[in-house]
Length: 340
Ligand code: GLU
Image (tube, rainbow, N blue to C red; front, side):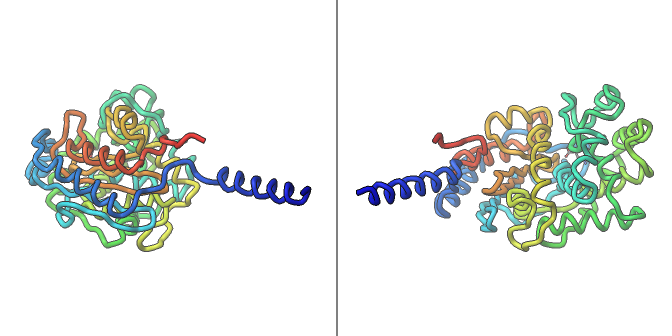
C-alpha cells in the first residue's frame, strides 16, 4: 500500500513538472487554419480604397496603389500567401530594423543604446525638433536621424564596402540576392535634403563619426532596396526564429540580441501610431512609406503585407488591418497567455 502511494506521488509530481514546463502561450493552429486566415484578410481588404501613396519621394507616387500581397512564414519556415508575391516595392523604413540588427550584431546591444538611444520621440520620423530636444540622444534607430546615425556605425571601411555589406546582410535575411530599385533611389537622392540636414545635425552633436552625407547616401540606398511580400515575411520570420533564417538556416543575429531589436520595433515601429498598434496586436512591427509592414510574433511567425496607400500616420491601411486580423485569428499576440 505504502509503495502504491509512493508511485502515485511520483506520477503526480511528474505530471506537475510536465505542465509547469509547458508554455501557456497557445500553439499556432494547423496549416489549413493559417491559410484560411491569410485568405480571409486578403479578401476582406482587397477592395478597400482608403489612404494614399506617399508622394514626398516623387517615385513612390507612381507605384500601383492596387498592389496587394500577403505572406506569412512560420518560425519553422513554412510559407502561407495570398495576392501579389512577385512585385517589388522599396523597403524604405523597414530597412532600419535590419541595419540596427547589423550594428547590434557587429558592436553589441549597448552600441545603439549608448549612441542615439532607444526611446520613442513623440515627434514625426524626420523631426528636427526631436534632435534638438536632447542633442541627438534619447531617440531610436527607427526614426530618420537615429537611422542615419545607425547606418554610419556599420563596419566595413569605405562607403562601397559598407554598402555591400548592408545589402548582403539584407539579402541573407530575405534568403535571396536583393538589389536597389534605381528609379526610387534616384528620386529620393534628388529630394533628400531634409535627411542630409538631419544627418549634419547628428554629426554636429557627435552621433556620427564619419562623413554624414555619405552615411545619408548609403541610408538612401538601403531605403531603395526592392522587396516583395515573401522577402519581407522571411526577414520577419528570421527575427521570429531568434535571429536564424528558418529557410536557409543561417544565423544573422545572436538569439540573445533579438529581444532588444523587437523592443525598439514595439515602441517605435509604426510612427506616431506605434502605441495604438501595440495595443491592438501586441506585435513588434515596422512599416515603411513604400507600403510594406512587417510584424513578428516571437517563436511563431513573421508576417508581411505590401499595399502602398498609407494613412495619415504613414502606415499602410490594408497592411495594418490584414496583419491585425491574421495575428488575432492565430493567437499571435505574445501577451496573450492561457492562465494556469
Ligand atoms: N527613405 C524614407 C525617408 O527617409 C524612409 C521613410 C519611411 O519609410 O518612413 O524619408
